[in-house]
Image 1 (cartoon, rainbow, N blue to C red):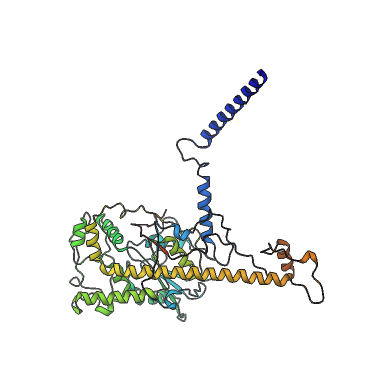
Image 2: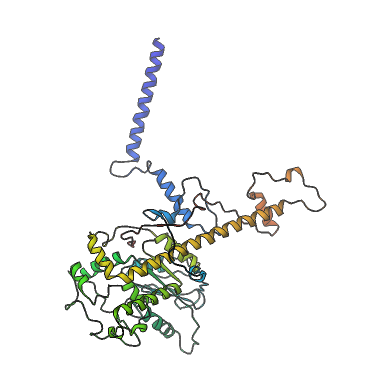
Length: 470
């Protein structure tokens, strides 16, 4: 009896010592002033796998799904809802892959609309793309040098590569007439003018939050006085394009004052910047009535948006990255991030004010709904094509494997050569043997468990999701 009590006493002491050691170790590993990394290990592992899965394409491997991986393209959204397409687009409208030749004469032209997250996306273009010859960006300099491999010629026409060469925030009307001339003037003398392909791209944003973001920007004293607004070879007169303020800027203006100015270019800015203004007499408002004018501009903006090589949406950063990579066959180094903290998101706006903003931007609202539908349909098609290519690769590998294991004519198949039913991929030995024979055996893609899920989901728009570049 005494011996049992002694043993129990020793066991209790050992347990207390283990507990004390554990407490000390936990305090050392997870101090109270920081989050405990040990406790977060599982979530970090899961999110890391999701990020890794998002970088795989049909041509590469993918991790096997074990319940931890999540679709990075649906994880960026707040709520998953059933996406029902509203517009009928042609196959040409939805399939946007282009044969972009960075070593030739092709040029990407970025149409930068104010307060759509274009600054962030523009920096991605010059700092975050895997290139044979990366852009040269130096601290303290706003522009980067983006030359083609082996040439002193740029492949990118944007704010961060060529500057505002066609005017500050030039629109579609300005860019399409200015860019070819600007590119040709950079050619050496007595050099034949190359036949270039210009691929126009842009970023759009929810009209209400873009409008609020522009108001906050103007309220802090920002202006776009340097914008040229050239149309049909001339700039608009002061009577055609009056100013909303009399001083140097409009700093300190209230939201009500911002909305009350009838000449405010913030109203329906995205529609105006994507349309061909020549169709409505440029800035001459007397050419036609306002309703007819905006209807023509909206149809022109939709047509130009469909014909663009690529456009993205601020509210869908990962999908924007994915579609750009699929379109131009270029890959970004680091994934895009989706953040909520912006100045526009911090503004508390009553429902009636939001309704007023939507009325002031009714054409932008219609354009954005159209663009969002087209964007998500393109994303769905790209994912379907990727899955189909993955299935074809798996089927092709299985056929190659069966051909490798088939008995040769006149020689019976040995028992050791009979493939086991559980075999689904060639072994390392078989790969080495195929390599020695000069044959190629592609590795089978192990798709995660989210791969074959429906991608018809689209999500409620964030109030604002512009990444703050660091």
